Length: 176
Length: 207
Image (cartoon, rainbow over all chains, first blue to last red; front, side):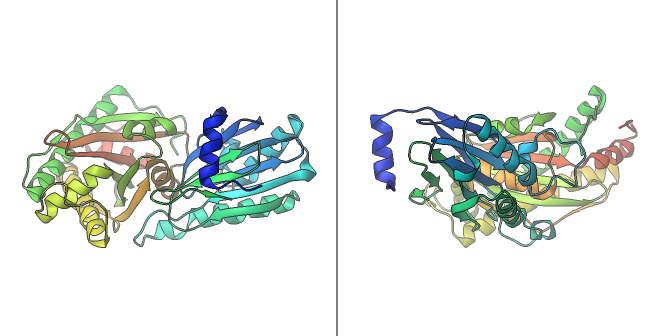
């Protein structure tokens, strides 16, 4: 079942659910009917993991690809390589099953226009590549993604349907 | 980067004072550019948590424009100017000599206009500090973005290497005539850089 943005809005009105906010370098897990939302993904990447059979979902907001170049790590959810395994273990703690997890990715945009060497390192792109790599190594399938480009995104996971809504400025919301 | 660094009150005050002079100069340039009076709040130098930096400007999903410049030389760091959506349009109108309200969207011309304002403001800010301290600084080409506040600021900080949970921020608010323009200025110095600034002011800090 794929809800159109209009149906999504209608469903929202009839059954109010708790929307749990996930900040930068954070991760949260919840079960149906709650929703997880992370606002303003730029070069950051949002990763949702969802177990259809138990309707448990998790959302992670990563900022950087690789933790190995840092010594003092206070927020593992900031990094793709630490955050994704951590999210998986949190979901399993809540009763989710690894082999039925499906992933969705959003973000990894290049927000700024104009040439600058530091920005040429394109963190967004590297976040996407690393997230895909880590998911693959854990045997988790990427169901869909909305990545790259140059727009900021807000990502919402609905744990009832497993659908992810992507909001951008000046465009219609999109379900992936 | 800013791990467990304590800057004494005296040095914080000095930072605030020097920013005040630099930004005063920048506000004057903006006033000349727009041919209108520009006011600014007293700059605030402080360590902030990531989330607090966003809260200073507005909601994470609010549309803003951002001019981002890298500072190189004796005091390396990052400078960001952030204007609210309406302020961005008002800035373009004032710069082009149009009636307020004429601009309702941003084209390439508007983008360049706002980026150039950021460039001019940064230049006069750094000239004032350079003139006072004898330090040499230059900026990279301005980068521009117009989108959700959260997306822009997090990307900007990630790209400039501010990966800590706490960042030292020097912040002020520019406004013109009942807030028809409201803009935030952020200076994020690299840690070693500050030391050189304090030394140049004759008050070396033990960082």
